[in-house]
Image 1 (tube, rainbow, N blue to C red):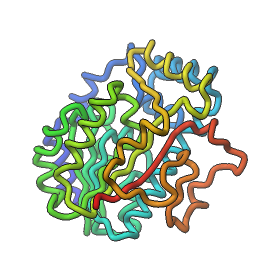
Image 2 (cartoon, rainbow, N blue to C red):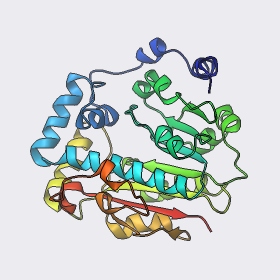
Image 3 (tube, helix red, strand yellow):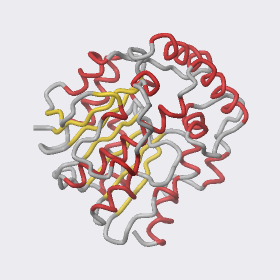
Length: 288
């Protein structure tokens, strides 16, 4: 995408300045807390305070979010190598390079990616998500996962993705912020149903199953801070993949999902990292 195209697309959903007017700095936000755990600087004192409370009850949260992001990198490379060329990434979060399109376009420069998030702080930094190769294209949708129909109906999706060809639906570390399991299922179904055979679903999800005491306290802190967080067991997570073909190694803790990625050293965590320290399940599946 050229520089002119990038600016024009950004203008469709407002300037950084107008977005900033809607960013609340008096309450912690999950995206900014996640940024803090990753070592980013796009967060406020209230986010850092809440994040530090999380670290007191779950000291390896930084390890967990790095493992989750590394899973996204590996899953993206694996699917790009399988020939997939289109992504719809919902719950994008604050841009942290390499972003999904950078990973996918390193494999195939013609890859197209639409990012979607409802957080004004992500909108304010969305130009960082539109640095596509000339052969490919990226776009950003300021939309809410609770209204998947509106996301699919945006001009950005229509101009960027061909929904008659396989698309990767990526929702990494998102569905645990949809507390009702029925609602979460409906969201996945609404987004996946229009996609053709050969499309893929990439999910990761926080769980209390691997560290019941620590993770449950994390859930309590998020809920007290005003962000609904619902940790789920492996059996519940598996229901999102009903009717799909799971890729090896199936549903595993995020740091153990490698697929056929030969570049695992790029995102490697110390060999001593345990499942409990990560406490995220992850999986990738193909729509038959």
